[in-house]
Every structure is written in C-alpha cells, then in structure tokens.
Length: 336
Image 1 (cartoon, helix red, strand yellow):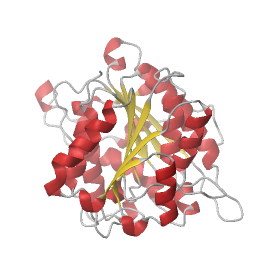
Image 2: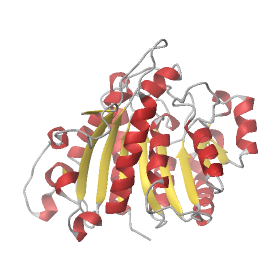
Image 3: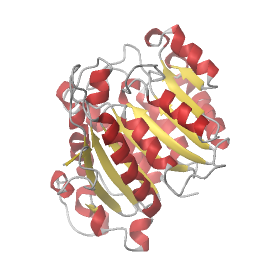
Image 4: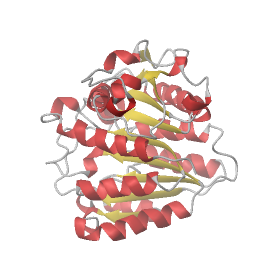
C-alpha cells in the first residue's frame, strides 16, 4: 500500500493480489470480475481500457476517528474487492482496472493522522483516472473519502469553470459539520466552500437523512446551502417512485454527477458493518433504485462506497450489499 506521506507512489504495489475467487471457465460467458481485473498502470493504453472502469481504494480511518466513530473502515477496500471478486462479469461491462490503495496513517488526539495529505494524494490519482477512463469507483474508507473524491473530480478534465457539478449522497447524515479539523462528518461543508471559491453553485442532494441523527444546526446549514434532501421516513419501499423522481429531477439540473454511498443509510439488518448502524434506514431496494437512476442518467463520472467496517460486519453482509451496488453501477454505466 502507498502511504499518504509518499505522494509519488500511485497506490498499492500489487493490487491484483486481492482479487481471487471461483473460476468456471475462460470463455466470456463464464467470466467473473477477478478474472479480468488488471493493474491500472498496465492498462489505459488502448480505447477499450479507457472506455472501462477504474477502481481505487482509500484505506482511511482517520476521519472516522476524528468524528468519534468506531474505526475499522481502513480495511474496507480489501473487503470490497473480496466481495466483488466472484461476481459475474455482465456483457457490456467493459475493462476493469485497479489502481490499488492510498493509505492514511491513523493518528490520535495529540498527533492527528495524515488525512489531509491522503485526501490530496487520492484526489490527484482520481483526476488522472477520470481523464483516462469513462468511470471511476472509489472503495472507502470512512466518509472522509468524499472530499478526496471531489478533489479528484474538480481537478479532472470533466470539470470546467461553468460545469454544473452534482453530488448525490445516499446517507443517513448530511456530513455538513463545522469542526476544527476535517473528518468524516465535514466533507460536504468543505466541498460547498470549495465550489463557492470556484464560482460554481453547490449542487448537493441527500437521500435517507435521519431526523433523529442530525441536529437542528445541520438542517439549518443544509437550508442555507440550498441542499435538497429526503428523509429516511419518506424513502421507504412504497415511496420508491417518488425517490426515483427526486434523483431524476436532481440529475437533470447538473452536467456531471458524483454519487457517494454511505452504507449507514441502509437498515442495520442489511448493513451491520458500519461505524453508525441505522436504527431505521432506507430499504435496500430503494437505495438500489437510486443507484440505478443515477447510473443510467449518462452523467455519472465518479462513485464511491464508504464506511464499510469489516470488523463489525456479520457474515460479510455489508460487504456483499455494497458489492452488489458497485456491480450495478459498473455493469449499467454508459457514458452520456
């Protein structure tokens, strides 16, 4: 793995070592992900690779620690690769390349870890990958991953001075907290300020916000910033058509879309392996519908899945749920 202090190293030395699983044959109809994933440095040299998907991990717990959460998300990228490995490669998926992990040293209250350097490093890698591939998927890591993802998108050729950047967050939390240091609770406030500095409108929507888990000041901040949201109570199975419409309406107003999936939006029975399991949550089929709507819009450039804590998972349940969402994104993605 690379270290956030070493900004010259482009991710882990041997990312393919994490990919293994069942093999039924080498013909196209038998293929699984682990059979086709290649190292990013060996790809991106032909049109097929450029038309495919690049994966990169962010092995970070520092933002969760600063946000007083339960650490363990730094093991998320490896667990996600494991859960993805044996999934079937659907026709039309395109090339899959793995750029390895950017790792962040975990600190403590006296000596914080190198989160800011790690976010900057990951952002640089994402920018390069976005310029080489039609889609980039980031494997988190805590939700501090989101600020690095944004830095990568904003620094890529996909975004210009007049580009309308949309951020769709599937999450129980706004993550608009004001804090002395960046953390997993601050990324979207940081992004809002960066977008204002760039002269762009902050376009941010959240599906699944829990009124019980966001203070009034967070709702006030969201209103001041023009954030659109739906609460978890209005995102139940009976409301899936309304949720799809919410996502569709939001995406229509932007030019390029970044989708971020915080797994704590799901019910604790579906996603126990997160720092803050949901006491209510949004049903999996509703989250899957949001992912499908965003992916099929033709505007999705970047996605991440965050807050998987394998040490708290039960039978790999959370990792499998996340992997299926990633599989949907990659297999259904088409450039607009």
